[in-house]
Image 1 (cartoon, helix red, strand yellow):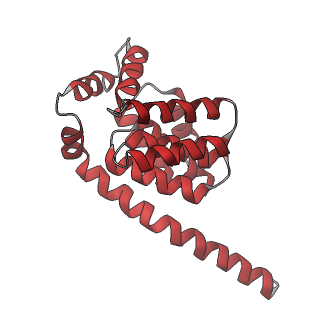
Image 2 (cartoon, rainbow, N blue to C red):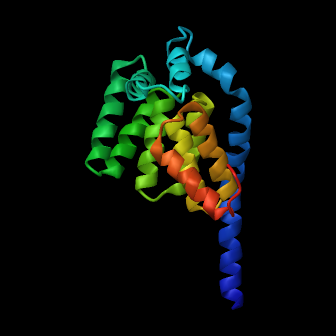
Length: 201
């Protein structure tokens, strides 16, 4: 191998390791802290009750319950923050990731403890091709809301794209444990089972 190519490859691997390591460490940590953190974020117990219903693999009304959970997670308690979230989501629907990032960054500045702001911006960063920044925002999402099944699914997708297949499996399994009804997660786990040599997931 040409020495310049070898150095470039090594540099790329080192850069990837540098931004993956803190994400992987955080991923392992929040799984252990999830129940306590979720209780702190949901003093009324409403979301916890919905999540319990969602976890039932035989739940026929899971789509309605999923919508209710997302609706609850999208409420910041501030009308101005909720407006920024809506404007950012509208920009995402238009395919304008740059405008979406601006709105979500303003939202995070306004409400730094609001998990959905980080998740929304992680989606926008991913659309914009900024995988490292997307990972960082997913970490911030999950540190604030460890039961965020969409963030876990996004984390799995990024790990899979980075060929971190075992980490992808862990993320998808964590998402499936919370939300066992998503076909995209089931398909991802089947895909990883084939890639990892038929090991049962």
